[in-house]
Length: 490
Image (cartoon, rainbow, N blue to C red; front, side, top):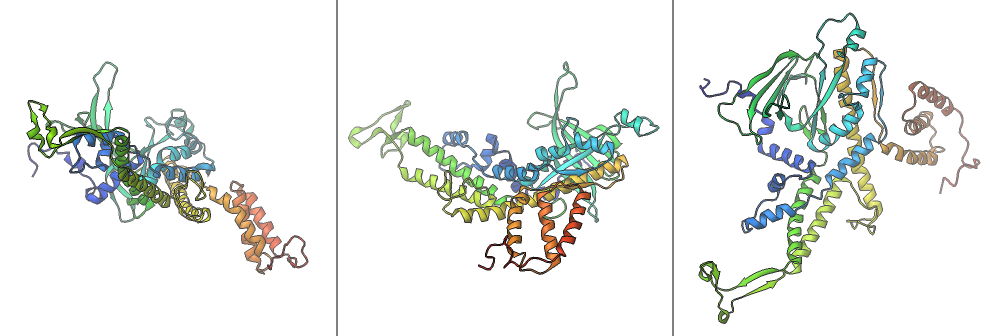
């Protein structure tokens, strides 16, 4: 039974059970704080708790001087640079689809650049990023596509949403989305002369329609009891045959269940922030002497009329002292350990050798490089796949609403493919005379072609592959008489 004072649209504030689990909520908040680089005092306060013996003034001072010096953002940048360093290849022919790929959000930003700038980091660190696809209003009847195009009705746009923006959702048994609710706080000032107002907004996107609700709130989100949700935009068709939301995952663990790519690095960064905050306080105290009151009496016994009366004969005195260096050194050592842990978790290595400048590891250069390669290569390949699937999902939605039917090709090539081509060539040169299998030779040479010419036209690629197949069937020269080989048996 609905109470008289209850908002009939209160269901708009219901969040998905995934967010109601405290460990999940705290984990998401931790990921967000690290992605935002602890940019606010409120974020730092959550992860720099006040100790029981710490004075409030000391705590506030520690909050102000603590700087976030994380490695997660560096790891994200490295993965992003590797995935987007070589331009992605998208093969389409349709005029409207090409226009959308070149300008996907109305700001002349390409679809690939949009994913690089607004989706990549969010997906890597937060585990999920959401891309909403919308279509321009198509009021009126058009005789053909040209008229519709001239009216601007064949335009689609994308908008990125943070993980926490999608507050509720439902998924069918086949994995398709029934609905999503996107929440945000906005400031709306219709005209220069009118007074602005903050709103809590809820966008309810269902399989065929979208409805927008709003509720007045203060800047800090507080609201009066009488302020209720109202329909800001009536339900209207969004122009798609399904919910136009594409989910881009970091580490996918199920439908609408994504995991941070660098969870260990995030924890190490927060631990490092805590240690660094105490280290900063120690450094401040070390550089600025403290005035210490020495007495066996309680401070209340010494103060009379706001005046402190000392008894020198009892050994009471005031003097400036500096803290010992032990705690200071211990905290510096802790920061080094946490920095190394962050490097181990992310594969981000500031120096390739143990004695190099800025090196924080005692490992040999070879050991560091092997660990770095395996850690980062996995992240790069995984993220490239996720981005490719996200772009395909967006293009599929656009093609569906514009009724475009053609095959699309989306491919990303990571810098590791370029780095590995030399190793592939070297391995082939060493083993080619000892493996008498035509298919093996053909496949190895195709890998070399694929890695050295990633943007090769498909027709030319197939032509080269056919030549390789023919070449592989020719007899190979004995290495003992081939002057191009060098002691392959040694």
